[in-house]
Length: 125
Ligand code: FES
Ligand code: FES
Image 1 (cartoon, rainbow, N blue to C red):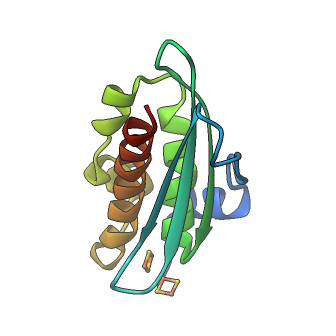
Image 2 (cartoon, helix red, strand yellow):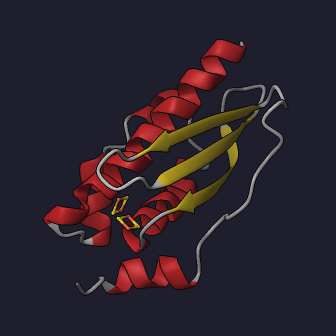
């Protein structure tokens, strides 16, 4: 299966790979897995006192589409409020990365990771 140029770009140059301290109260951590394939994605958001996502990092153990989806959302969430980040849809990711139907669940993983991170932040505060 051929990946789009955009997916390949993110796989070859993933943005914002890494981790923050999950116990830091300004850090939100979303950890999700895809039952379809067993891939795992961890997305972390660093949130300012004003509720703005200042930084984001990810670690994804999975296919190229999952890596590209998580890399892309780390770029998209920066500067957004949590409510704005919650509006990012897997369909936006699919469209941007030109993912084929069999790879849609990879983009859903990224949407779920954002939601899980927001949930974690709400539980912490
Ligand atoms: Fe193999 Fe996702 S199914 S990496
Ligand atoms: Fe499962 Fe991509 S194949 S996340």
